[in-house]
Length: 103
Image (cartoon, rainbow, N blue to C red; front, side, top):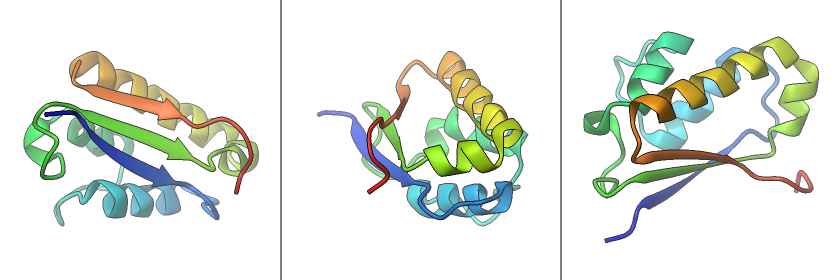
C-alpha cells in the first residue's frame, strides 16, 4: 500500500484558530484535539490519530499557505516548527509545502 495523501488547504486562513480548524477538518482530528501547537505536533506524530488508510505513511500537502504566512509570519513560523517536529518524531509523516500560485 502507498501512503495516504491529505491536502491541508489554507486558502482564506488568517489566524491560528483558522489553521487549527483546517487541520481538524483535513486530518479528521478527534473532538478532544486541543487546538494548540503542542496538541498539533502530538496529533501529527501519533499514528493512532491519523486518518484511516494512513498506516503506511501520511503525506500532508499544505496548499495556499502564502497569504497566512504573510499576514501572520510568527504564527506561520510556529506552524512550520510544529510540522518539522512532528516529522522528526514520526518518520512515516511527510509535510510538504505546495509552491506556486494560490489558486
